[in-house]
Structure formats: C-alpha cells, structure tokens
Image (cartoon, rainbow, N blue to C red; front, side, top):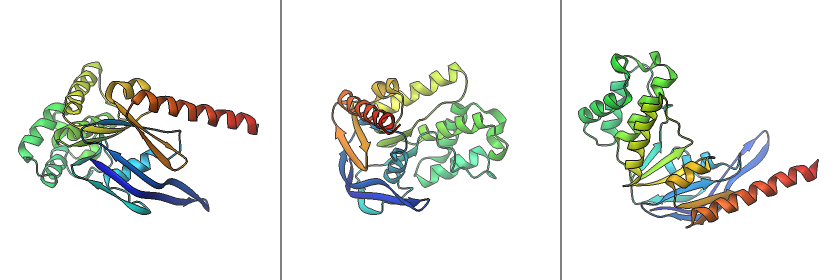
Length: 227
C-alpha cells in the first residue's frame, strides 16, 4: 500500500508558480498495477519521483508498507567510472540482495559481454539501457515505478525483457506513467488521473482512460477557442 496524505507540490518556473499536486489524498493498493494518466506537463513524472523518494513534496507525506523501486530502466544514477558489474554489486549491497547472484543475473540478462567489466562511461546508450533494465529486474520490489520505459536491443531481446517484466508484474504492483493505451491496458487494472493538481483514483482502468480522454478533448477545445 502506498498512501498520499495531503500531498502538495509546487515550484516556480520563470517567476510563475507551477502546481503539480494540491492536497492530494490517494491510496495505491498493494499488488495492483495502476496507470497514472494526465495531459503533457501536468507533472506525472514529478509525482512519480515523489512516490519513489527522489523528490520531496512541498507539504504532506507519502507512506508505504512495502518496497518501491526506482523508475524501471533508469540509467541516470550509474557511476560512470565504475564498471557495470561494480555498479550492480553496489546496488545489490544497498538493497540487501546477494551481490554475486545479482552480478551474474544482470550480466547474463544484459548481454553486453566483456564490456560488463569496463567503465560505464565507455558504454553506448543501448548498452546502458540494457544494463539499467536488467538491474531493475534484479531486485524484487513490492511496487515497480514505470515512466515510459523502453527496452533497447533487437526483437529477441525486447521479447525477453517483456517476458521477465510480465513475470514481475504477476507478483508485484506497479505505477505506470505511459501515453500508450495499449501498454496501459496490458499491464494495468486501475488508473489515477492527474489534472490541475488533483489526482483521482479509479478502480476500473477503462473509466480512468475515458476521463483522461475527456480531459484531452476539453484542453484541445480550449486551445481552439483561444485562437
């Protein structure tokens, strides 16, 4: 369970206050995959980072009785001077996972060969992506955070990634930020729509998608009316 209690988040951009969340009270149930939907620029990724603990709310608090992942496939926190294997070993120790098993698992999964033992700064973007996705799957979490994750590699590698990710979703919950409704429908049974600082939870994913599409339609008409 992840509970948002009176959560507010705002910041100033070019001298104007931008409100991401305003007194939000929402519960994400344990073991449920939830799509976080909203128009571009509403702050979905910011809200996801607050849930993941990498960004603090302006007010309120976020509570959880389980483990929460970093965004799946995120490669921005690698130490570029360490090798891929050293980065994996460090994360394993932080999360209390057997480091040797983790190093073996990620090495086999990422399929980057000898480069696994070279500094990450020498990696191509595709290699970093494969390493990051393998690392995300190497730690078991109660809830996975997914922000428009893409898997690098050929069709075979993407299929392998999808298979292991589907397996993880069968045993854990998730919060998805995605503009792809096909992906949302495949993995999510519930939805939460962010609009004008308010987050509304829906047990039915189709209802959440319908509300999201309505908000898009209203916003498009408002632009036309202004013109």
